[in-house]
Amino acid sequence: MHVRTSIRTKRILFCGAAALLCFIYLYSTRNSYTSLANGERISLKLLLAGAIKAAEIGGAEIISVHDGFKLDVESKGKTKEGINDPVTAADYRSHCAMYHSLKQAFPGVAVISEEASKGCDRVSIPDLRSITDMVNFYKTGNDETVNIKDVTVWIDPLDATKEFTENLLKYVTTMVCVAVKGIPVIGVIYKPFELKPNCSLYWTWTKHGESSNLQNIPKQESDKMPTLIVSRSHAGHVYNISKIAFGENIQIVSAAGAGKIRARACGVYIYIYIYIYIICFKLLGYKFLEVATGNVTAYVHVTAIKKWDICAGAAILSALGGTITTLDDRSINFGPTDNKLLNSGLLATISDHKWYLDKFSNV
Image 1 (cartoon, rainbow, N blue to C red):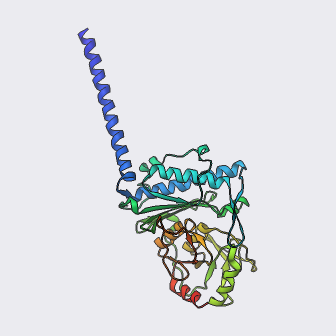
Image 2: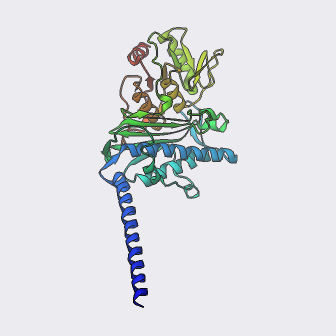
Image 3: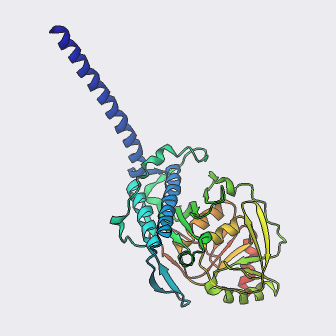
């Protein structure tokens, strides 16, 4: 009887000790995570991993809607150029997954999205806490923490909605940007339908690192013929003022092409010659990547544009040494209380920014 009681006591003590150790481990892990998410300071390395994961899960929702053939296309109205501004089930589902997963993981951070939460009760919201195991996967060196009140996350759940409805899937992206004190420092652009290896995910963290497909990009030659990429909605207007600024031989590139188009797919250069035929797309993530990878020399936008469309591209471009300003040479702030609409156009370049500004200022 004494022996049996002793064994039972040892088992209870052993189970109790094991349970205590598990509790201590789980509490310390939880405390470590929430201290990054809820404390006065937040880890930018953790935010980078969260931004990448959010862009990928948004992309998965877009693919799911596309494969299910239930786009549910609606209209948000007309743009200032009179173009229909569509929104689909993919926009809403991507928003729900991206926005709410980021808010749950980083509850103290301001998150601004292009879309509103609609039908989110029908969308499974992924738990981003698993990113604590991913932070060292992206080789970015030492971590950096900032005051959580200084951080604003901008997301575009589906860039190029019109192209998505037309099955022009190569232009579709999800975008996440992390701004600190209004300055974009982390940019993520994800192309969910891209099948080429190492071509779907692009990211940078200023002064810390970038995705491998943005490394070792050849520097543009300063005497290179300017090639401008523009939005289809105002391509004709940009073409007219660009001819005045740069001369009759200026090359204008739109999504479907105009003049001489040079497209590079992960190191492979393709040269296509097409007669001048300009049509209008809004493909902000795609355009910034074209500038960043050297396929064009500048991106020009002359009408109003929303900041969630440009924040991730601005972060990537500036991290690679490029510059983005308004057309009248003012910096663009991305803080939580800043105006979400940019009315004075923008110019994005990887080099020779002042030269382009001077050209346009003379028009």
